[in-house]
Length: 212
Image (cartoon, rainbow, N blue to C red; front, side, top):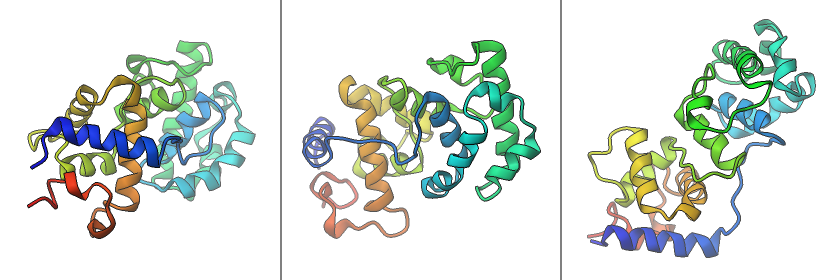
């Protein structure tokens, strides 16, 4: 069985060459737009979110503009995403707090971001990593699954935050946000939930699920 430090080293070396440039599959042009898109993407595909956000951002280009909208008005733009009613409510409340507490800007710390309605740790980490270029590790279902299958984290890491802490501890700081994306895309397209494509996986030699 491959030792854990060697697993991390292998992943960094492989993806640094295979996918040196990574970016969110959500379309955005500012921290505000990334936050909104990420909130909408919860239990929804990035493709669907990218279909609704252009009109939404045109109508509400800033937190200030969105703070003045009604939930019903926002719902008319996002009704095709999952859980549109609760997301409309959270978006308006988020924008109102951004205006009242943060001068109409999106804050850039975990504590401040998670004060915003509808913003959990994973969403905040996405914004920190990709809008503010911080060493943040969002853990979604893909990252959680792949980390366990590869043996990057112990079985005792039962929560997304526990997985996040393990990954941050072992990936060098300069790779943390990129590693999130490497693991996410690997889980989305190769190490899929129901039927992983182990036969064409470039990480099979270091994977606990395939090693004998």
